[in-house]
Image (cartoon, rainbow, N blue to C red; front, side, top):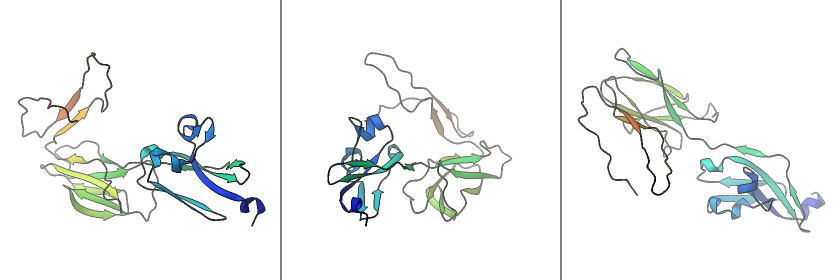
Length: 215
């Protein structure tokens, strides 16, 4: 074993995304295992020649570059020049074509993400909250009816993290799209919360109203 490695007493893994704000203090790298954002979610396995960082329940905010730091017995620190880039993504379900008319009998669904998964990954397709099928491809075709059917996808075995659902119907679906999902305002100011909506053609909307907010 290399003598310098044998004198190593501590291995730290630190995130260097947003170096000034989140990965460093006084321009010094910080041990992410001590960071409150990672509390209870990280563990590292260390031996004389390797270190493995495990992050559970990953979040989009965990995305960034991670580097290994060595701290020697004499207090000297060595930061690895190479880094590992972690991208945490969410699944998005798209339709092809993006809109449906009365002549469409089938539509293609695409389970999309910013990561390239391997051909060994399996996709889980749900219809009206019931299992529909498994596929190795991120694409599948479904039939279109006049009734509103709700579809979603997930990546096996992470069934508990599905994509946002998509409604498919020849007669239209109940759907609301907000101009912004987050509004910030100063006390005493005026805010506009705008939306557009669609509904099945066999229904007529008599009025709309906004319920009290959920706290």
